[in-house]
Image (tube, rainbow over all chains, first blue to last red; front, side):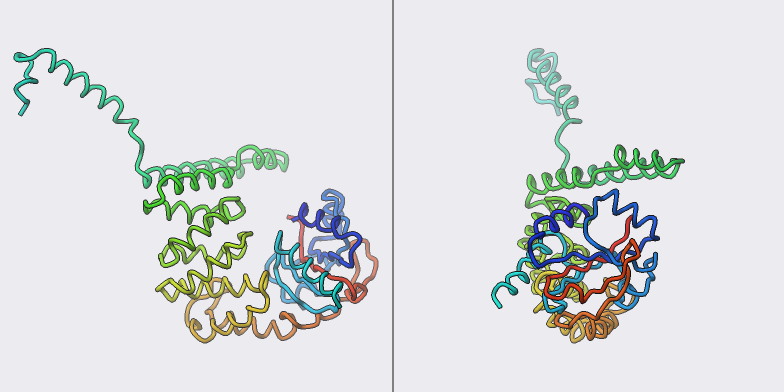
Amino acid sequence: MYPHERSLVKRMQDKPFALIGMNSDPRPKAKAALARENITWRSFWDGGSTQGPIAKSWKVNSWPTIYVLDAKGVIRYRNTRGEAMDHAVETLLKEIETH
Amino acid sequence: MIPQFLKPTRSPIFFGLFLTLSILQTAFGADRPASPAQGYSALVREYQTAQAEFSKLYQAAKTDEEREKLRNEKAPDSKKFAARFWDLAQQNPKDPAALDALVWVTTSSYQSEEAGKALALLAKDHAASEKVANVCDIAPYISSMASGDFLRAVLEKNPKREAQAKACEGLYTYSLMAEPAQAEKFLALLSEKYSDLTSGRGTGTVGEFAKTEREHNKTFGIGQVAPEIEGEDIDGKKFKLSDYRGKVVVIDFWGDW
């Protein structure tokens, strides 16, 4: 996960794009992961477990789970990864440019 | 009956030749290439043995360092095996073992390069086989255009309802990832035709899975405005999802394991 996410964030740094994590680790473990994996994007901290309030309200029961939102905040894709994620993001960025 | 000309008393030269050839054939018989089925079984055994050895050592390990070392040095590399299974399938395309090899590649090494290629071949030649049903569960996670084609081929061509249902569940999952406009169609098909069967995605029936999904999609489905998230980051600073309105956002539920 991390290498692909890192390169996506880097490629998109001048574009209207944000990768937002939703982390389910105890805080010290989360902080260690940020440092070790060179995670440059922001994450919500969901209370330290996979049963946190946000994961529960979004009914997340398998990890990782991914939602891709367009610039209007509308959910457009679910569990897209790798190249498919790049393609989804590029498609939604084009929508901003053409409207 | 030994032919006249081979009888030792009649023709020592021919008999000598016959004996030599027999000995040579016996000696080299052991090296005659295994059948594709034997080759496939041998590879499976080799992989399982390597896994068992690794598992034994891993469980006996006392420190995290030991465990990491084992993971780096002794864990069998499923991708290397995928290449070998792929070669076996390529070299014996008409043999039944080729299908087994392709199924192995997709189900035991879904992240290998060969997995996408194997899916394409399975779609083309084996969509109607009962052996591809389980491949449907992993197909959406195989990073390849072939995933959608494979699942559609199974849905259209496979005679077994169970395989069709798995393909349809796979297509629903795949659609959410890559062709979201199609997701609703497959969800509907699941309810219409396969409700009674066991779901590969949850713990109940296909009908129950579809019902849960429909409920979930009321709030979190494709086309819904994502609910606001208000929380704090890992350093404790407060922020909101709506801070990012105007940007394309990927929300990634993750943990470090």
